[in-house]
Image (tube, rainbow over all chains, first blue to last red; front, side):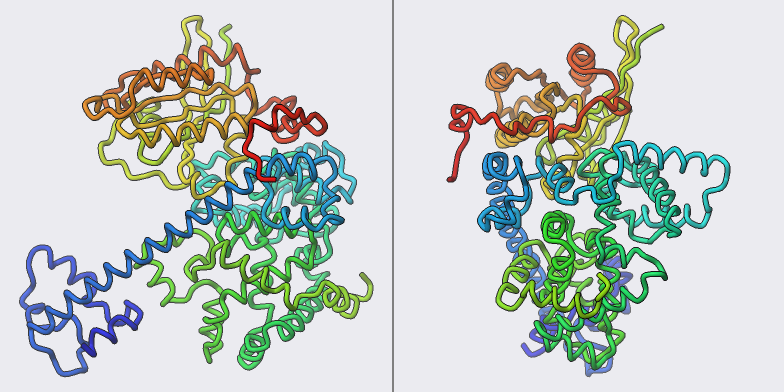
Length: 410
Length: 207
């Protein structure tokens, strides 16, 4: 009984009954070697009897089956709650159209409507709400995409477009929402649009002396899913003009601002989640090793797609402070996993490459090609519970005070 | 010179009703008994030539994974000229799902969209759960095209796409892709000021 208990607690990889090659041969009958080698006990321990071995093997199979069934049940329940949430949003459509659509700024005055916005914008209204809430501080003309795009095409045709940039764009696109297949180079229906949009964006950036920032493809992709390319281009350019994003996209010239943003994050982390802060500090895990990866693609690399859409709804409304709130919410969800006493292990986990979690996700049949943190069970519901629970300590005034202190020129 | 049109067609319906098989039959005239379920979106094109030599090129968006990703809906519906909503005649629940898709299309897509309801797996009529009368009646009430098909035998497949092609140029402007004149559906169908009381009372209201 002791052995079976230990089997259930240990990540499946370490005590997996037999390596895959053995399993393959099992279908044609056990090999001579397999008849002697125990499948349920490491080789450095004294062997079990054949009978005991078989029994434990069967126990293990049964436990795995139960675990899969439990995972399936959890998944179903989660899915049902999500559908219920979506239905509620659908049902609120008339309220949106009556109260918010005429002038979206009403949500800044009416807390009930603001709460409604936080639940997620109905998909039908998302494009127009995003467009209006982002605004057009750059005062770009409706033709902006067309003119940037034709300049990009001329540069591409004449060979003036940097080959290095082009290959960066291709690599970025290849890792953009790969599980959706929409942006696949050969078969993706939106691949040409995404590439056009990014080339035009590079041209627009060149006017400011800036180059391509890896991760921009994700942002362009999210906009292209929601709106036509001309509109997507203008909204993207304006959104990236907001100070925090502008800094993270600002290349070497914005290095000091980015450092300031890291300090702000550390202060907030120390305030709200001191245990994580101390463990990170002890192992020299600075915001530079995860925050940039989250913010530049606006979480699309790490969070499940649906969770991301809602995060975008709110960060477009609330501005830079919500970027931080969402980032802290992510750390909150990951918290139980963040106490490794080892720097490498922590960094690996934050990259979304924790081996044990990947094994569990594989065993439970969860998809591995979505957001990188899906393997940690980070879904929309869990994340939002965490973000909502930050109401207890999150103060907008603290954010404002910190940005004033660290970025006095703002 | 013959006329040429290009249209975006979205394919909707519950999983395993045969959406991808239907497209595979239409585009490549193939059938595969053990097709794996489509993950993410698949994208294919096929051209239909009508009797008057008009050619209609369909850009077919096979929308697998829709149920997982509600936020993708705007992409599928944007500039869609036609939709084929598929159900499985041996599964009455799949018609229920089809009704949901159709409601969704009527709410979200361009009002001029041509919708075809398609009862697939007609080769399995021995196990039929959805009668032709029931589906046809519903389609007539909602003003949809309707047909039964079998992706397996090919029965009715090219017919339904041809029927859609014939209906299209009459109701929608050609080539939505290049037409800059087409406004996005979102803002266009949102009526800011008009809120007739009667229209609201038809919908379930939670306030």
